[in-house]
Image (tube, rainbow, N blue to C red; front, side, top):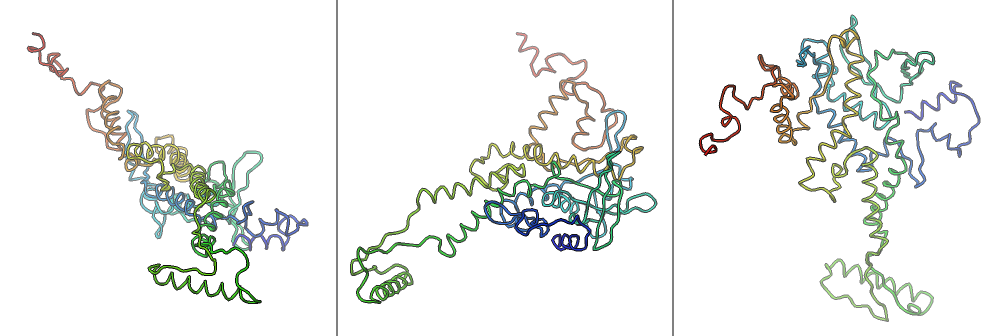
Amino acid sequence: MRGVKELKRWFTGEAERKSVSLNDPDAYGIFGVTPTISGPSINASTALRVPAVFSAIALCTGAIGSLPAKVFLSSPDGGKRAAKDHSAYRLVHDEANEWTSAGELRGQLTADALLHGSGYAFANRVNGRVIEFIRLDPRSITVKIDEASGEPAYVHRVDTRERTYSFRDILHIAAPLGVSPISAGKEAIGLASVLERHAAHLFGSGARPSAILSKEGRAGTGSDGGASVITNIKKAWRNWQANGNADPLFLDDGWTYSPATMTSTDAQFLENRRFQIEEIARLFRVPPPMLFDLERATWSNSEEMAQQFLTLTLRPWLDAWEWAYARVLLSAEERAEGFYVEFVLDDLLSANAATRATTYAQYRAMGAMTANEVRSGLNLPAMTGADTLDNPNITPGAPAGENDNTTPGKDAA
C-alpha cells in the first residue's frame, strides 16, 4: 500500500521531481523496502517472520494492552480515587469504540509504533467531548511541525483526499527517538533472517549431506561406468535407509563411507543464532529470557527480571500513553484540578508482592507513610482516620515490653 502511494506521488508530480536510478538506494523507499547488507529487505511484514521480533512485539503489545488504565482524581491530602463519573474513564478503561476495547487499541497503536515508528488514533468529538477513538493507518499520516511555535499538525491522506487534524484530536504514540526498532535494527533483523533461512535449508533441503561416500582413483570403467556405479550405490543407500538401517550396508569396489559430522563452523553458526536473539532483545529493550532465551534464566532471578521488564521496557511506553491520553481527553483546567490517567500495575507487581509488603510495612512502621498512602499505592480507596503517621505496631500507654516483643518480668530478671 505504501509503495503504491509513493509511486502515485512520484508520477503525479506531488513529490519533488528528480532523476533517480532504480539502482539508487533512494529508490527503495518508493517501493516500501529496506535492503540490508546481509541480503533480505526488512520491513514491517518481513521483520515479523523472525521469531524473536514477533515474540518481542507480542510481549510488549500484550503487556500494555492487558494492563488496565483509569482516570483518577487526586485529593489535597495526597489520596486519590477513580473518577468513574468522568467521560474519559470509559475510553481508557473499557472500550475505545463499539468494536474495539481500550486494551486492544493500546496494543494496536503500540504495535504500529514498534513496526512503523508511530501509532495514531483519531479522537471523534461530539460537543467538545471525545466519544470514541478510531485507529488510523500510520502509513497514511504525515506530521507537520509549525516552525514558529513547534506545534504539530497531522495530515491524514486517503487516496487523493487530505485532512489536517490538530494535536488535540490525534492520540499519538511514538517509538523511542521517533524511530521504529525495525528501522533502527534492520541489519540485526536481516542477519537473523538469513540465519533462520540457512537453518531451514540445512535441515530441510539438505544444505549438508547426511554422509560422504568416496573412492580413491576412478569410479568404474568405460564412458558411463562411473555413473552407473554411483547410481547403484545411491539405490542401495536409499534401500538401506528405507529399511530403518537394520541391515548392514555393503560398499564394494573400494568405496568408503564417512558420516558428516558437526564442525567448529557449525557450532559457531548455532552460537550466532543465539547471539541474534540477544541482539533483537537489546533492540526492543526486552530481557532475553522473556524471548525464551533461557540460557541465563533461573528461578531466583525471575522476579528481578519482571521488575526490569516493567522499569526498563514498559515504563517509558506507559508514561507516553498516560500523557497522550491526558493531552487528548483532559483539558488544561481538568489537569489543574487533579484529574490524570494512570495504569494499574498490580498484575505486573504481583510476583514481587512479598517485597512490596515488606517495604510498605517498614515505611509505615518508621512513620514515613500513612495507612491511606499505602492504600493509595495499592490502588485502594482511602479510609476515615487513616491519615496519621503513628506506628500501628505500638499501643499507646502500654509498657515498653508489650511494644518490643519482650516479657517485662522475665527480661528484667
